[in-house]
Length: 266
Image (cartoon, rainbow, N blue to C red; front, side, top):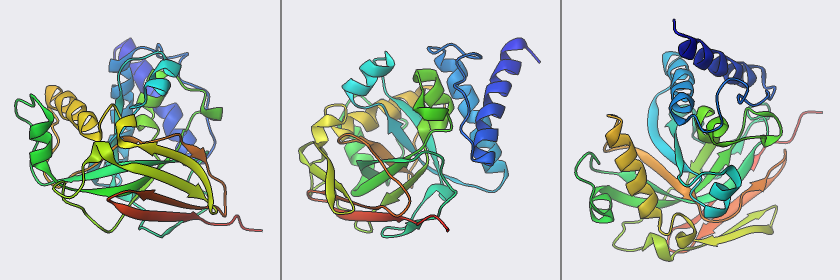
């Protein structure tokens, strides 16, 4: 194997072991440069493949870093993406068991379900809109295998875009009935408001985020397909969650979705 391959495998192994042992690890920046995007996605693919080999199924993708403020914080000018697997799904109103995540945070998003493939010219959001079957309110439960969330761009990309779990509402709203850029969001933890935002906070329009993802995946030969779910990116600031917390998100036009985190055992 080449040195590059060895380094990528070592980084993937570090993140994999952190997830398996439920113990956050140091950043991978001693192995991969903070701006080495090609290596970062290759590392992510190694660990996603491991999960697929163990029986998980890919059911969609997530888009991260859609906020200009977060991009500035990480020194980049572009979002990132990760894979959504069927073992990441939490039922709306469901409970996240203890011991599943390392250092979770929550953010509210618009989720889309595709009824068409996105592998064409993709010149505008019109093609994206035509391929979307509907939108849902979503809570993404982000998590980092890297200790203290000490991440740069390559760290989060390699860590499957800091994916953890996700929840989407039961109701799928056609785009004829809701304009994603116009929605407003409120998120509360234990009844206390912790985040507010709007559709415009997500790359100017959640449909812009999906267009970016569709073009990116088409260009690498792995396009979005009918049936996939897309988490389009945060509508407002994320918030830390702890055992026993209850999280509720309301997005205008899409409704409310909630999730609870189990109490720690005595």
